[in-house]
Length: 337
Image 1 (spheres, rainbow, N blue to C red):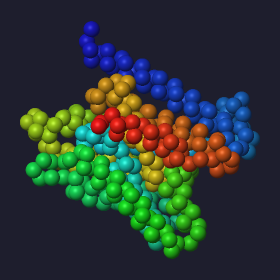
Image 2: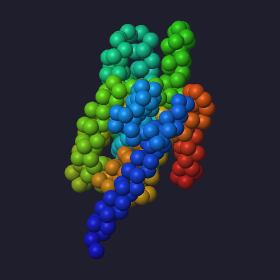
Image 3: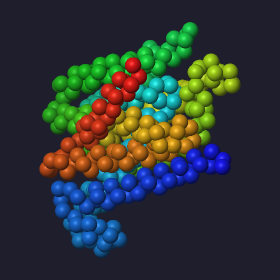
């Protein structure tokens, strides 16, 4: 039997299983929380037969938050898959290599020093975050690159970790003179609190994913070649530097647009591509869709668990993701020794 056919069948089964997990987690997330909404009332409320209170809890509180987590997890996972392929480093993640921190500094500066209407804030923040993330990624890439040897994967991760710590310090300095309300917002952002839980933030995030997911799948073949040693990639005709820069910009855009509304969430982009490769193998054409669904499910699950651990505010999704991801990161570090 054709091995490619077997792989595609396996991918279809995995995707089907992930979709079932996502749907089950979404149903659980809609039904449990600080405000009661029984599972028996979910379907009637979804179809417009709920009370005012039920409509408010579902459509104004829970459902937009769940959709934001799903989309953001997908974007972070896709960004992580691109970064791991481009850098040839299994430890790469937008939160670990400093992209999220660069986006966070830009968001902090924008939020503290520029005023905008609440309605347009959702659409402006992803662009501000993108500029900050791109600036950080450019500096990290420049410091990790050697003309004689090309991009140094280990150096990139170490430089990114250093930048992430330094930029977190910059954010603390920036907010030290701010008023309490703005300090509270940025502190919650740093912890990975899902703050953009409203429908405008969904419409602001969705176009980034709708454009960059098909683009990344289109570039999956190039990403496979970039994952090889650089001389091999060059020998088969890949314009390595151009493709690497294009894909890095896509990764920065995905991560920045996600963290603009979810806060500083790390490790989703690290874990999801690993899960995908373990399930369907290393070919990006097969692993990227699985990674995207895995990332969406991981963040929805982390937020659902976190917001029900402590009343009324719960535990931020970023902390829950870190509780799962940090030990996994340590495991990968030990494994690579």
